[in-house]
Length: 270
Image (tube, rainbow, N blue to C red; front, side, top):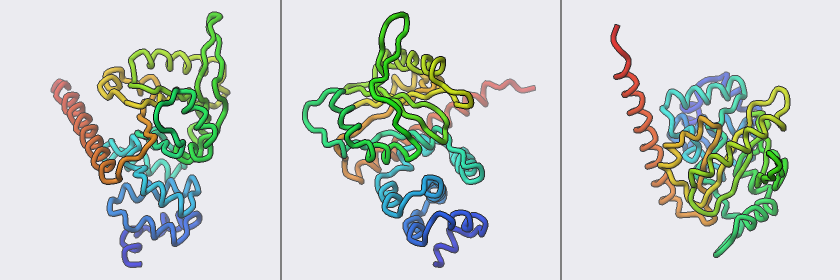
C-alpha cells in the first residue's frame, strides 16, 4: 500500500484507472520501477480492458520495450501517454511493435508464407492478442486490380482506435528494398478505393523473418506509413531478449539525439 501511494499519488488518475482496473491489476503494476513504463501499461490496460492475466502476459513478454514508443526520448513518451490518458488517443508508435512473438503458431522446420498465413488464421484470437485488441480482421488474400494486373494483400485488418486499415505482408526472408514499393502500391490503392469518410490513411506492416535494419533506416519507411518488424516463431530466453531490446532502444535514442544535435548546429544564428 505504501508503494501504491508512492507510485500513484494523483487522486484523479487513480480514480480514472480504478473504474477499469482491480487491486490485482495494481499489484502487477507496482513492481515496475520505471514510471513511464508503469503508466504505459496502466493506460493501455484501462483502454483495452485487459484481464489481470493479460496484463501479466504483456509485462512478461516485454510489450513496452517492443513498441516504437520505447525508442523515443522520455518527454515524447510522456506526451503520448498523456494523450492516451486524457483523450483515449493511441498513436501508431504505441500500437506497432518489433519483434512480434508468433510462437503460438506452432511452426517448426521448413515452412512457406502460406503456412504462416494459414497458421495466423487458425490462431486468430492469439494473433490479435499479440497485435493488440483493437485490431479487427477484415480479409485474407484481398485481391486488388491495377491496370488489369491482380495483386493480393496477405492479411488486411482494421484498427478501431487509429481508424485505419492495416495491410500486413508476410515475408519469410530478410526485408528487401523492393518490399517497400509493393506495400506502397497496396496502401495507395486502399486509400483510393477502400478508405471510408472519416478514416485516416491506411498503414502497412511488413512482417519478416529478418529485419535488415540499415535498409529500414535508409528507406525512411515511416514517412510512407510503413512499419517493418521481425517475427519470432520460437522465443529466446527473457534475459537475452531484454538485452537485445535494451540495446536496440539505446541505439535508437542515440541516433535520434545525434539527429537533433545536427539540426541545432545547422540553424544559423541571427
